[in-house]
Image (cartoon, rainbow, N blue to C red; front, side):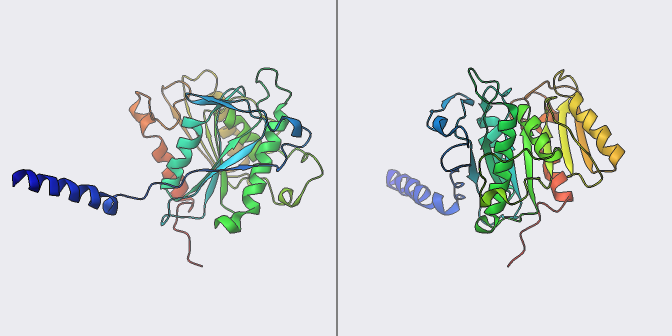
Length: 291
Protein backbone atom coordinates (compact mmCIF):
# COMPACT_ATOMS: atom_id res chain seq x y z
CA UNK A 1 0.00 0.00 0.00
CA UNK A 2 2.83 2.39 0.89
CA UNK A 3 4.52 1.73 -2.45
CA UNK A 4 1.25 2.41 -4.24
CA UNK A 5 0.85 5.73 -2.47
CA UNK A 6 4.43 6.76 -3.35
CA UNK A 7 3.85 5.83 -7.00
CA UNK A 8 0.62 7.82 -7.10
CA UNK A 9 2.35 10.80 -5.51
CA UNK A 10 5.16 10.70 -8.08
CA UNK A 11 2.67 10.44 -10.92
CA UNK A 12 0.77 13.44 -9.57
CA UNK A 13 3.96 15.51 -9.46
CA UNK A 14 4.90 14.55 -13.02
CA UNK A 15 1.49 15.42 -14.42
CA UNK A 16 0.99 18.49 -12.27
CA UNK A 17 4.45 20.01 -12.85
CA UNK A 18 3.67 21.53 -16.26
CA UNK A 19 0.71 23.35 -14.79
CA UNK A 20 2.98 25.09 -12.30
CA UNK A 21 6.03 25.48 -14.53
CA UNK A 22 6.47 28.58 -16.63
CA UNK A 23 6.27 28.07 -20.37
CA UNK A 24 9.74 27.88 -21.93
CA UNK A 25 10.87 30.92 -23.90
CA UNK A 26 10.22 30.97 -27.62
CA UNK A 27 13.08 29.78 -29.86
CA UNK A 28 15.02 32.31 -31.88
CA UNK A 29 14.02 33.04 -35.46
CA UNK A 30 16.90 33.75 -37.83
CA UNK A 31 16.22 36.34 -40.54
CA UNK A 32 18.66 37.20 -43.34
CA UNK A 33 19.32 40.91 -43.77
CA UNK A 34 19.16 40.56 -47.56
CA UNK A 35 17.17 37.86 -49.36
CA UNK A 36 19.99 36.90 -51.72
CA UNK A 37 22.95 37.74 -49.52
CA UNK A 38 24.83 40.98 -48.93
CA UNK A 39 24.87 43.12 -52.10
CA UNK A 40 28.14 42.64 -53.96
CA UNK A 41 28.86 39.40 -52.09
CA UNK A 42 25.83 37.29 -53.06
CA UNK A 43 28.10 34.46 -54.22
CA UNK A 44 29.38 34.03 -50.64
CA UNK A 45 25.97 33.73 -48.98
CA UNK A 46 26.05 29.92 -49.09
CA UNK A 47 29.44 29.52 -47.38
CA UNK A 48 28.64 27.65 -44.15
CA UNK A 49 29.38 28.90 -40.66
CA UNK A 50 31.27 26.90 -38.06
CA UNK A 51 30.27 27.04 -34.39
CA UNK A 52 32.31 25.56 -31.55
CA UNK A 53 31.96 26.13 -27.82
CA UNK A 54 31.13 29.83 -27.56
CA UNK A 55 32.09 31.17 -31.03
CA UNK A 56 30.81 31.25 -34.60
CA UNK A 57 32.66 32.13 -37.83
CA UNK A 58 32.85 33.09 -40.67
CA UNK A 59 29.81 35.27 -41.39
CA UNK A 60 28.99 35.59 -45.08
CA UNK A 61 25.19 35.87 -44.99
CA UNK A 62 24.56 38.53 -42.31
CA UNK A 63 21.39 38.10 -40.29
CA UNK A 64 19.50 38.80 -37.10
CA UNK A 65 18.05 36.17 -34.78
CA UNK A 66 14.81 37.38 -33.21
CA UNK A 67 14.01 36.47 -29.61
CA UNK A 68 10.60 37.86 -28.60
CA UNK A 69 9.90 39.14 -25.12
CA UNK A 70 8.35 36.59 -22.79
CA UNK A 71 4.56 36.64 -23.28
CA UNK A 72 2.79 38.75 -20.69
CA UNK A 73 5.85 40.90 -20.02
CA UNK A 74 6.11 42.82 -23.29
CA UNK A 75 7.25 46.42 -22.98
CA UNK A 76 7.47 47.22 -26.70
CA UNK A 77 11.18 48.04 -26.30
CA UNK A 78 13.82 46.15 -28.29
CA UNK A 79 17.60 45.79 -28.48
CA UNK A 80 19.94 44.83 -31.28
CA UNK A 81 22.77 42.84 -29.69
CA UNK A 82 26.23 42.88 -31.25
CA UNK A 83 28.54 40.16 -29.89
CA UNK A 84 32.28 40.67 -29.70
CA UNK A 85 35.15 38.53 -30.94
CA UNK A 86 37.86 40.93 -32.21
CA UNK A 87 36.14 41.00 -35.63
CA UNK A 88 37.58 37.50 -36.17
CA UNK A 89 34.62 35.50 -34.79
CA UNK A 90 31.43 36.14 -32.83
CA UNK A 91 30.97 35.17 -29.18
CA UNK A 92 27.48 34.11 -30.12
CA UNK A 93 26.56 32.51 -26.77
CA UNK A 94 27.49 34.63 -23.74
CA UNK A 95 27.57 37.90 -25.72
CA UNK A 96 24.63 37.06 -27.97
CA UNK A 97 21.92 34.48 -27.44
CA UNK A 98 22.27 34.35 -23.64
CA UNK A 99 22.05 38.13 -23.47
CA UNK A 100 18.91 38.06 -25.63
CA UNK A 101 17.26 35.67 -23.16
CA UNK A 102 18.18 37.99 -20.29
CA UNK A 103 16.41 40.89 -21.98
CA UNK A 104 13.42 38.71 -22.91
CA UNK A 105 12.75 37.97 -19.26
CA UNK A 106 12.51 41.72 -18.66
CA UNK A 107 9.99 42.24 -21.42
CA UNK A 108 12.41 43.43 -24.09
CA UNK A 109 12.52 41.88 -27.55
CA UNK A 110 16.08 41.08 -28.65
CA UNK A 111 17.82 40.58 -31.95
CA UNK A 112 21.29 39.02 -32.15
CA UNK A 113 23.31 40.34 -35.09
CA UNK A 114 25.59 38.15 -37.15
CA UNK A 115 27.79 40.70 -38.90
CA UNK A 116 30.65 40.29 -41.37
CA UNK A 117 34.12 39.95 -39.85
CA UNK A 118 36.82 42.00 -41.49
CA UNK A 119 39.69 40.46 -39.50
CA UNK A 120 38.74 36.87 -40.24
CA UNK A 121 41.18 34.65 -42.13
CA UNK A 122 41.14 35.49 -45.85
CA UNK A 123 38.23 37.86 -45.25
CA UNK A 124 37.25 40.04 -48.24
CA UNK A 125 35.41 42.47 -45.94
CA UNK A 126 36.15 45.84 -44.37
CA UNK A 127 34.77 47.42 -41.22
CA UNK A 128 32.41 49.35 -43.48
CA UNK A 129 30.64 46.07 -44.32
CA UNK A 130 29.98 45.35 -40.64
CA UNK A 131 28.54 48.87 -40.38
CA UNK A 132 26.28 48.16 -43.35
CA UNK A 133 25.04 45.02 -41.58
CA UNK A 134 24.34 46.87 -38.33
CA UNK A 135 22.49 49.70 -40.04
CA UNK A 136 20.50 47.32 -42.22
CA UNK A 137 19.53 45.38 -39.09
CA UNK A 138 18.28 48.53 -37.35
CA UNK A 139 16.21 49.46 -40.40
CA UNK A 140 14.85 45.93 -40.74
CA UNK A 141 13.69 45.92 -37.11
CA UNK A 142 12.01 49.31 -37.50
CA UNK A 143 10.36 48.27 -40.77
CA UNK A 144 8.70 45.33 -38.99
CA UNK A 145 8.00 47.06 -35.69
CA UNK A 146 4.26 46.89 -36.30
CA UNK A 147 4.28 43.16 -37.00
CA UNK A 148 6.45 42.48 -33.95
CA UNK A 149 4.47 44.93 -31.77
CA UNK A 150 7.51 47.08 -31.03
CA UNK A 151 7.76 50.80 -30.39
CA UNK A 152 9.96 52.09 -33.25
CA UNK A 153 11.13 54.92 -30.95
CA UNK A 154 12.47 52.54 -28.28
CA UNK A 155 14.95 50.39 -30.20
CA UNK A 156 18.51 50.40 -28.89
CA UNK A 157 21.83 48.67 -29.37
CA UNK A 158 23.89 46.56 -26.98
CA UNK A 159 27.52 45.86 -27.89
CA UNK A 160 30.32 43.86 -26.28
CA UNK A 161 34.02 44.49 -27.02
CA UNK A 162 34.35 44.51 -30.84
CA UNK A 163 30.56 44.52 -30.98
CA UNK A 164 30.72 47.58 -28.75
CA UNK A 165 32.82 49.30 -31.40
CA UNK A 166 30.17 48.48 -33.99
CA UNK A 167 27.37 49.62 -31.68
CA UNK A 168 29.24 52.88 -31.07
CA UNK A 169 29.50 53.79 -34.75
CA UNK A 170 25.86 52.85 -35.27
CA UNK A 171 24.92 55.21 -32.44
CA UNK A 172 27.21 58.15 -33.05
CA UNK A 173 28.47 58.23 -36.64
CA UNK A 174 26.74 59.12 -39.88
CA UNK A 175 25.39 56.05 -41.70
CA UNK A 176 27.47 54.55 -44.49
CA UNK A 177 25.84 54.33 -47.93
CA UNK A 178 23.47 51.41 -48.27
CA UNK A 179 24.90 48.76 -50.60
CA UNK A 180 23.19 47.89 -53.85
CA UNK A 181 20.12 49.59 -55.29
CA UNK A 182 18.30 49.72 -51.93
CA UNK A 183 14.74 48.74 -51.12
CA UNK A 184 11.88 49.60 -48.75
CA UNK A 185 13.81 48.30 -45.73
CA UNK A 186 16.49 50.95 -46.30
CA UNK A 187 14.02 53.81 -45.77
CA UNK A 188 13.62 53.89 -41.94
CA UNK A 189 16.27 55.50 -39.76
CA UNK A 190 19.27 53.38 -38.77
CA UNK A 191 19.96 55.45 -35.66
CA UNK A 192 19.35 53.63 -32.35
CA UNK A 193 17.29 55.35 -29.65
CA UNK A 194 19.70 54.35 -26.86
CA UNK A 195 22.90 52.39 -26.40
CA UNK A 196 24.55 50.04 -23.92
CA UNK A 197 28.30 49.60 -24.45
CA UNK A 198 30.03 46.85 -22.48
CA UNK A 199 33.86 47.07 -22.49
CA UNK A 200 33.87 48.45 -26.07
CA UNK A 201 37.13 48.49 -27.98
CA UNK A 202 38.84 51.66 -29.23
CA UNK A 203 37.84 51.43 -32.91
CA UNK A 204 35.38 54.12 -33.97
CA UNK A 205 34.58 56.51 -36.80
CA UNK A 206 34.11 60.26 -37.03
CA UNK A 207 31.57 61.38 -34.40
CA UNK A 208 29.55 64.48 -33.66
CA UNK A 209 28.20 64.23 -30.12
CA UNK A 210 25.52 66.74 -29.17
CA UNK A 211 22.94 67.18 -26.43
CA UNK A 212 20.57 65.16 -28.63
CA UNK A 213 22.85 62.13 -28.89
CA UNK A 214 21.17 58.87 -27.79
CA UNK A 215 21.27 58.10 -24.04
CA UNK A 216 24.22 55.88 -23.22
CA UNK A 217 25.02 53.32 -20.51
CA UNK A 218 28.61 52.07 -20.34
CA UNK A 219 30.47 49.47 -18.32
CA UNK A 220 34.09 48.30 -18.10
CA UNK A 221 36.72 47.21 -15.58
CA UNK A 222 39.50 49.68 -14.75
CA UNK A 223 42.16 46.98 -15.22
CA UNK A 224 41.01 46.23 -18.77
CA UNK A 225 44.00 47.64 -20.71
CA UNK A 226 42.15 47.39 -24.02
CA UNK A 227 38.74 48.66 -23.31
CA UNK A 228 38.40 50.90 -20.26
CA UNK A 229 39.72 54.12 -21.81
CA UNK A 230 37.15 54.32 -24.66
CA UNK A 231 34.24 54.70 -22.27
CA UNK A 232 36.07 57.38 -20.27
CA UNK A 233 36.62 59.32 -23.48
CA UNK A 234 32.95 58.93 -24.41
CA UNK A 235 31.81 60.08 -21.00
CA UNK A 236 33.96 63.21 -21.32
CA UNK A 237 32.49 63.96 -24.75
CA UNK A 238 28.93 63.36 -23.56
CA UNK A 239 29.41 65.63 -20.54
CA UNK A 240 30.87 68.38 -22.68
CA UNK A 241 27.86 68.17 -25.02
CA UNK A 242 25.29 67.99 -22.21
CA UNK A 243 24.12 64.55 -23.39
CA UNK A 244 22.87 61.76 -21.13
CA UNK A 245 25.50 59.17 -20.17
CA UNK A 246 26.01 56.82 -17.24
CA UNK A 247 29.23 54.92 -16.61
CA UNK A 248 30.08 52.05 -14.29
CA UNK A 249 33.86 51.57 -14.09
CA UNK A 250 34.65 48.65 -11.83
CA UNK A 251 37.93 48.36 -9.90
CA UNK A 252 38.88 44.99 -11.36
CA UNK A 253 37.56 42.21 -13.52
CA UNK A 254 39.53 42.40 -16.73
CA UNK A 255 37.91 41.89 -20.10
CA UNK A 256 34.91 39.82 -21.19
CA UNK A 257 32.98 39.56 -17.94
CA UNK A 258 29.86 39.75 -20.11
CA UNK A 259 26.74 39.53 -17.93
CA UNK A 260 28.69 38.46 -14.85
CA UNK A 261 27.97 34.77 -15.29
CA UNK A 262 31.49 33.47 -14.54
CA UNK A 263 33.43 36.29 -12.90
CA UNK A 264 34.60 35.89 -9.28
CA UNK A 265 33.96 39.61 -8.71
CA UNK A 266 30.72 40.10 -6.76
CA UNK A 267 30.17 43.60 -8.14
CA UNK A 268 30.41 42.31 -11.70
CA UNK A 269 28.02 39.45 -11.00
CA UNK A 270 25.43 42.07 -10.15
CA UNK A 271 26.30 44.62 -12.80
CA UNK A 272 23.37 43.63 -15.09
CA UNK A 273 21.12 45.06 -12.38
CA UNK A 274 22.46 48.45 -13.45
CA UNK A 275 20.97 47.82 -16.91
CA UNK A 276 17.59 47.16 -15.31
CA UNK A 277 17.89 50.33 -13.20
CA UNK A 278 18.98 52.48 -16.13
CA UNK A 279 16.29 51.22 -18.49
CA UNK A 280 13.64 51.60 -15.78
CA UNK A 281 14.65 55.22 -15.14
CA UNK A 282 14.13 55.92 -18.85
CA UNK A 283 10.73 54.27 -19.03
CA UNK A 284 12.01 51.48 -21.28
CA UNK A 285 10.75 48.71 -19.04
CA UNK A 286 7.30 50.13 -18.43
CA UNK A 287 4.48 47.76 -19.44
CA UNK A 288 3.42 48.25 -23.02
CA UNK A 289 0.22 50.34 -23.13
CA UNK A 290 -2.92 48.54 -24.22
CA UNK A 291 -4.00 49.38 -27.78
